[in-house]
Length: 204
Image (cartoon, rainbow, N blue to C red; front, side, top):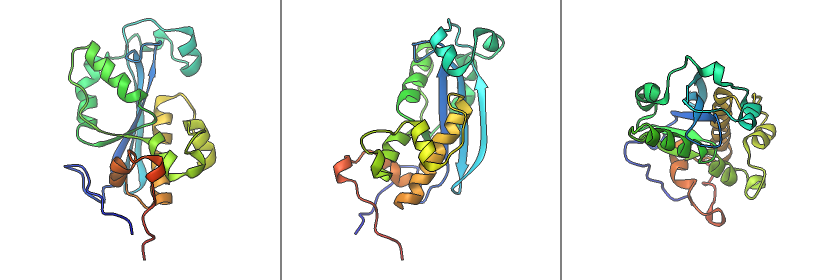
């Protein structure tokens, strides 16, 4: 029998709303965010998807440009992280926020620290941890966003922040369907050791 899972404070047990995010960076500094993407989900469906360019006020490496195609000229007139911070914080504050790996959490924290601004107060959910538990074939390897998207038949343009955010959110929705755990459940279950993870009993 599946154990009852108490959701974190402020999150309803059957919560279906969450926002997925993704960031692209100008160089090897994870805080050099030059694009942030958002995908908002409710009632197990995508309801909105968008991205913003951000001026990181730093240099762009050729390696990073080759990955995401964003140049310094593209963000010259874009707002800085400090100028976007209040809007981003309002979107994410105290909500379930999905990111694929902890990179986006680290990146936003570093950008906040560099600008001497408060950290984003989100309930972070790592979609790689979710996928590794929901889909046994990806427990040990192959849980990159591109690999998971191929398996789950998710069509997206990799390394565009808006597209990556949407794909990460769709991975979580697929995991919800496959596992029987709600998004709120996954805030807890994603941290359970792989060897201890079990799916809930089938509902009748």
